[in-house]
Length: 413
Ligand code: PLP
Image 1 (tube, helix red, strand yellow):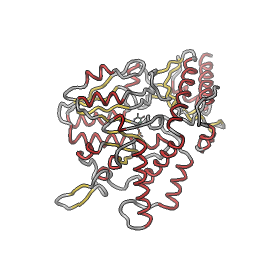
Image 2: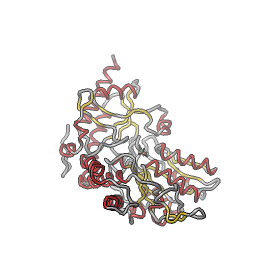
Image 3: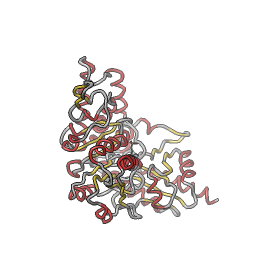
Image 4: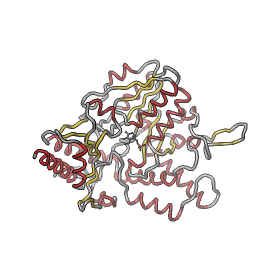
């Protein structure tokens, strides 16, 4: 165990904010290392949802009564909290969705409908989550367009020369992840966007795996779209965000019709609401949006600079411990990484290792992590993935390593 040198960061105190981290599984303390899939919720978020449903619930935007007005105000404040969190210019640029997946699908339908034509090209990367592959493939099928793929090297870093070559007159949009959920790679998104913009190609950034680990500034990176999920940043599930530059969203058609997204409806013609409401059809997940804002405020109170510094120490410590295990191969050794470890152990099926770790109270994920092309790159069927956030500890890293050593011994017999 090493002592963290990070100032202003008391991980024990932080863990007290997360009730589930006190739970036991099979009588053993829970070691939760599946944060890439979803993160746990601080008390303050759980209490906020209880408060809403217990005292304040009412449908937003349509009521003139006290509860509805109060809830509408809280919902719009949540939008402003999101705006500040990602440093967007205006709340008109913040659309609430059900998550990353639904935000990407929204862009593929809306942007795709307006701008994608036969023989156009859409550029993604080899390390994308299925959510940032399949909606684009479906769009290509609808429009007879072509999906092009930026490869990565064996360290898990994007091949930027290949990227430059793949961009062409035909490229209509680039869509890449900020951080890989299976390799941990932090991509040079600012550079990726700069290069695309030289050719006037817009860029969507999948932020599902960055918001909980690092600072996001959509103005600084200058992306056209940015998407993320609430449940991966200590907020409720079923809520997410689609950020789009105002001038970009303004030109796009709505992709779903229904209540709230309209201005005037007649059987002859319907006109649409202004931004961002034209993209929010039906009753939105307003409780989720408010819960998400509470989670973002919580992250702000921990301090993103503390999170980055602490996780860097945790990353270096855990990586060095894992590398010391004989017969363990780490996949994803990029220079810039988030605290995600994908690995295999010689002659041990990842599923077996995951099952045994589970019995030790250690929750990891096994399989392809919804990134089958990443597994194909290495010609493997899946990995064991331990994904950590700021409430994980050096002791938990030791427990993982100890568990893996035990498994190794079991399979040596
Ligand atoms: N993109 C990345 C990089 C992810 O890691 C995930 C989820 O693991 C998603 C997209 C999809 O997120 P959601 O299922 O919350 O829509």
